[in-house]
Length: 201
Image (cartoon, rainbow, N blue to C red):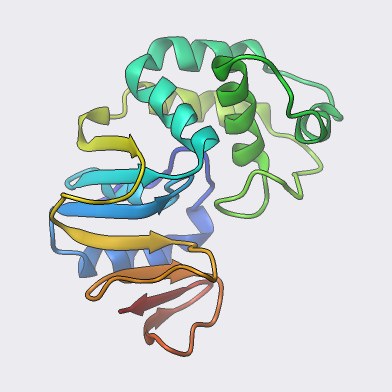
């Protein structure tokens, strides 16, 4: 089983990829070694334990604030809505905002409105839809966060199936893992292809 939504990505156009992962990943413990915005693993947490290991502190703090203080996190996001047309580009160019909370809120909005999945740097939607994010925040408010475990550092000491979501080109994959990406990786076995590619290691 899986959710039909993610944390801060619009995955509605990738239903085929999500359905494939849901059917193929039978292990109830999923490890995300290169965690960023968790576009698919967040959705798969409906009946799986997701162990997300972050090396990017901005993404880690964004999820940590949500997991530790969900009500406060969602409340602060609502305070920024609505915003003017230049707000997202201003945030992208001025990332010296003080405070972990401010960073987390702005980082969430940049990811949510970025047209590229698992990305915070745009391009952004020309006509920002505020109604959709309001509904999305309601969904996140009732999300069962107990299955989502996050940690800053390397993925060691945890048993489960590894899923690499949009890994960097230099990533060294561990055997018996799965990779979802928009890149062609000739050295891996292609299992599924629609709008994205899913490989087995």
